[in-house]
Image (tube, one colour):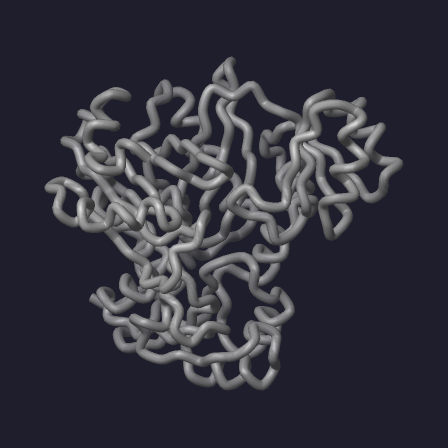
Length: 380
């Protein structure tokens, strides 16, 4: 049996732009599939560099660095959005880049993202572009109060945003956030937050992992539950939307689609991330083919198997020094499956790793059972 047309053979080199934990776990998945991972990073001892076959250290927008990197790899992907889209364009002249730089540009800018989703007919919450202080009054009229004011770029884990509670708060919030323009988003009375990881291959084939329920603390993902405890009709709607987004983008690779479910059961897209996603980490222990292996398969042209789940799961992030202080108890507790990222300093708000907990398929417990399963982390 031969490989599909365009698929890379074993020992080919997967170039990963970015040196964080998603690159680390992608590199490990690539090695399991017989590929070699070469990391382009600006931090030589970062999480991904620790497990890679090769590392190029340099800026993501330096032409000489990018050419050296491209000469050493067979295909290029990226592990987070805050890399240079111009740099990816240069790489695309030399090697296939998957997902494309055009998709990266959309996901890097919240206005571009909202425009794309709206034009594609994807349901989103009401939003408004805010280029100057004069747009604030218009936004208040369109969105109502309160609403969320966000930077269009470089915001993540709760950073780069502010809740505007009253009209008098709008102008100080606008002045405090930079760079401009900003985007305003209506507050949604949502029942829960969910996400879907969707992979699309070179041949256009698409698979989706089960819908995941997500809970945040201080703007950072805290706990994910799989499958999400939503009606089947809502889950089907969410998966269909994820496929619609991936197809509209002409994606090759993996995409995380974050969504709100409102009190009426309507699903609204919040953000997209064209790469492995924190809310998909449960797949590492609960699925035969996890999100990282699926991403590697997609970008190297390998077939995409069904994204099946053999167990129900909970994923708990390990954040900052408080969670890491529990590490001796975590590794001593049966049933906790820990994954550390190799970061040196456990700073407040920094993701240091995560823990997965598995349950029999169809037996995800209720609130008390989930909390009890977390062991020492239950008090966090």
